[in-house]
Image (cartoon, rainbow, N blue to C red; front, side):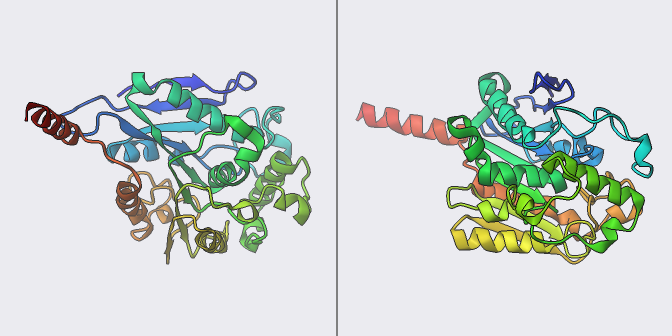
Length: 316
């Protein structure tokens, strides 16, 4: 496996793309070039959740795909030790304001395409995967990213959104504001997104994936927990409905259990007990089935057969 850390933004040394590139084993994998998944971890644009990085990348590798973790810019220069006391939070990052992250997604896709031959990547089969705030970032890239990027926009083959903020009009659960930590995370998330701690609904809708859904979007896979007390599952339900009504291929899975931030929801990566949920854990198996339908496998066996048939026709 090729593991590297590459810069994607000269204005922020911590904005990097980490590679998890599989070695080429033709005997075990029939495709000459592999699809690649770019993972955007969550963290409220204030930090980046560790369990939504490498554990997810390795799970994607296990499906036979290359994986990349995009550590995009967040609002703090350093990772906060705690959000309990606002006065102890680190210095704010001048390059951490939205929508710089959308440009970084594009830079990541561009970098992968530039190295497609070297890394054995099928550059036409790049998938974006985002959790929570990272899911909002991916959904933003899909819905209004082209308006920002113009001709520089790179359309992914598909997208995957886990417990993502996809509808800014859906209110947060009150539980999110029950602690000082929750209130501070929300405050600095808003500062990152809007440069104000108290954005109006009009401001929220300027970066709302739901209202910017359009028919030229790639297929989308959504999953959420009905018991998520941070981001209301109505985000996934309404976003899926909007995609369906617009004609964008969509698959939605709403699990009865599970908590926000559970990532893979398995026993291996769970940082606390309730991050394991037997139902939510199935989302990766469902995703693998979905990707097989979305992605186009160009196997060596198929090409060799076509080449042989071509030779036989020439000999006739």
